[in-house]
Amino acid sequence: MPDSVVVPIVDELDIVRARQEGRQLAKETGFGPVDLARVATAISELARNIYNYARPGEIELAQITRGPRSGLQVIARDQGPGIRSIEEAMRDGYTTSGGLGAGLPGTRRLVDEFEIESSEGRGTCVTIRKWLR
Amino acid sequence: MIQKIPVLKIGNALIASIQIELNDESAVQFKEDILNQIKATGATGVVIDLTAVDTVDSFLGKIIRDAALMARLMGASVVVTGIQPAVAITLVELGLELEDVVTALNLEKGLARLADLTGGV
Image (cartoon, rainbow over all chains, first blue to last red; front, side, top):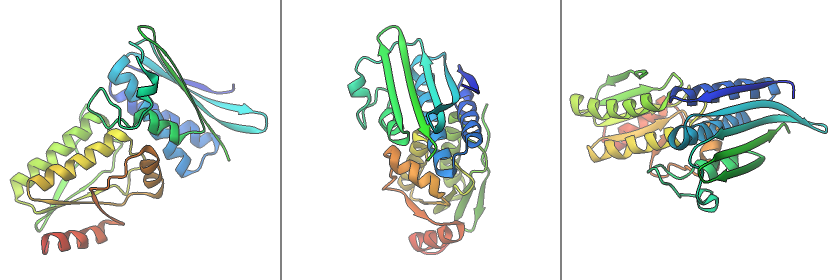
């Protein structure tokens, strides 16, 4: 993996920082404007989840390749309280914070691959990947 | 850190163009500024211009929708203008269609729409 950037998510401005770094790396990877917006938005949602529920955490951004394809991988990691029910958290409109509940299910629709692992009391790790077309 | 978005008044309309990358706190402040400016100026319409905005996530989307609904409660109409193709695509994919928000392609069309809604600007 040639390039990897880690953005700590501690205060609220780190959400902006993470999505700017992500947009920049996605641009260098060769993504067009629509995918740049998708990637930046997905990072914003993941970083805000960390900030709202589990800070401090981090967003790790990396350019990746798989066979002939190249793309961008984003790992959002925290040691927060974990998600009690991933099934519920992935449902549109489900929220425990008074938000819109669009975060995780919406993020999944913006990217090509979405993996989530969480255990109560130990934290959450979300990995997303977007491939160049 | 809070960054302020200038809110300008033309006739009975307020115009606010978001030209910076908004953090959450600044977005909340922006919403309150608009409502306070409606009260202070007696404006009957507001245009929120997103021409320079390249990312709208669920938080900013909710702020914009809330600002429009709150302004309506105060008797002012809101038109959101300049949503870029990439932003429109991500908003719908996110599940944030902003159905209850009036939109227009650009600032000029937004002001015309506002004039229709408010009976002249």
